[in-house]
Image (cartoon, rainbow, N blue to C red; front, side):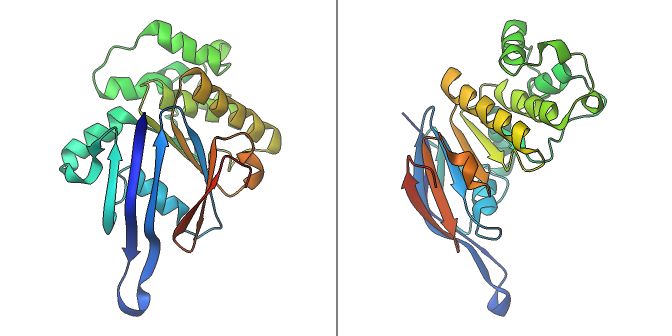
Length: 227
């Protein structure tokens, strides 16, 4: 089942001599439960790709469909609600709310949509992430690796169609980086979660379903191999 379809996506910043073509005619698709990693050097266009797919940046041309819905055919207000309900984000900087506990941070996206959290599912997410004994702790009482686990839980709790991970191990040491990757792999398999992750660390792509490389705005599908 195709969850994400990107077709002839281009993004240009500036004009004249200041013109930068960040993405050039990028096309690819992801199936449900597929875990794809996007690799590339700094400035290659991979972050721009993630921002466009997540509806955070508007492409210059091209189409993006999520579960058959044309993301940029929607009005901005509708797209904002659609994004919140269907796309989970994991950021390098964690972006947790310091005054909320682990459990409260995880269920926060549900509360934004006035949804009552399913406590059984919340407990399951906490267990999968190894956070059950930390659920009443504040972010400041956690290690960096534990904070990133909370961010992963927040992205998973709404059971979104797509999770976008922006350098999720960028602020972590090698051990915590491996732990976070193992958790993302587990989420992909256990929840059949579709994940698109960008990373500059090609060693972290071992085991993902597909590797996509972005270079000078062009995307190449390297298939199901380590980059």
